[in-house]
Image (cartoon, rainbow, N blue to C red; front, side, top):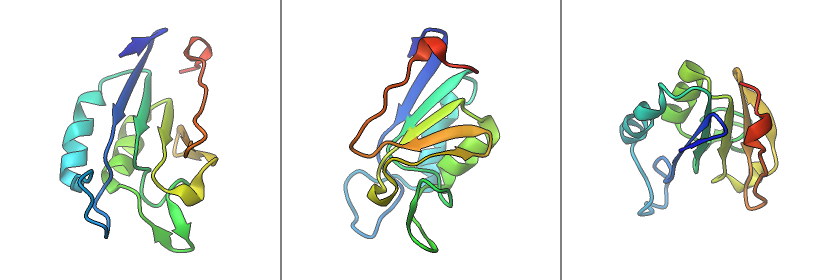
Length: 119
C-alpha cells in the first residue's frame, strides 16, 4: 500500500526453523515473494523474519537465525526502513543494516510517522 508517498510492503512467515512450523518458506520462496517490492521507492519493508547475520537476528554469540533472502534484498534495494520480529532476544534493537534503518519491534510494536519519513 502507499501512505503519505511511502510504499509499505510486508512478508509474513519465517525461513526454515528446527521446529518445522506451518509458517515457513524456503529462502528461494522468500526471495520470490520479496521480488515485487524491489521497484517500490521509498519502501518501508515489514517482515516477520529478520535479515540473517544482522544485529536483529542474534540469539547468542554466533547464533543467527534470520533470512539470507531478506538480508540480500535489503542490501540490494535499500528500503528506507525495515521492521521485523521473530527473534525475541533482539526485541527493541534499532540499528543500521547497510544503508537501511532496521528495528526488531518484537511484541512492543513501533509507531512510525510516514508523513515525516525521510527517503
